Length: 188
Image 1 (cartoon, helix red, strand yellow):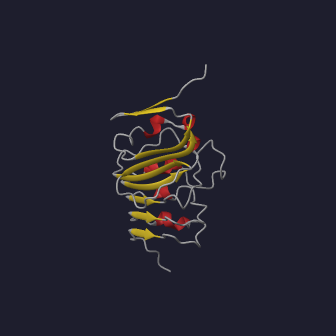
Image 2 (spheres, rainbow, N blue to C red):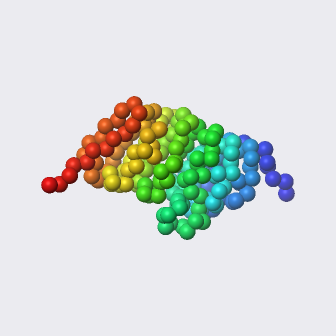
Image 3 (cartoon, rainbow, N blue to C red):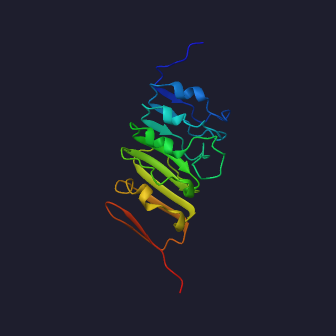
């Protein structure tokens, strides 16, 4: 069977039968859009599958799909799943929809300098939105000590809106045009 090497759009939205993305998707060198939103049973994306999609412009995973990101130094699936550092190799990525439940697993060098539209959910927050039409960031059910402002400082100048839901230890947050600063109170 001939492989569709020139495929530019792959949409598997709300496909409840997919538990693992085939590694062969990484061979789709012309792929510009990968959409697996609503694939609630998706538990595995093979290591370096996403990183091989060099022409990818839109990656839509969403909040009701894959959440098992592996990161070096973080015990989750033992290096069997895609990791967030693979996103750094996507130099054409301009649209991203992703949920990252474990903030402590986010690498410090994770940057998205070219994103025009995104919906990033950190912790166990949720969003009522769908496809990213603006720059939205949600933080929920996490603690302020797990936030790494440097990781996302390139996102904050453009984020609108930003939502904080049940973020423990967060007393005050100041957003400026070039950084995010968190201020927590200390007990005496």
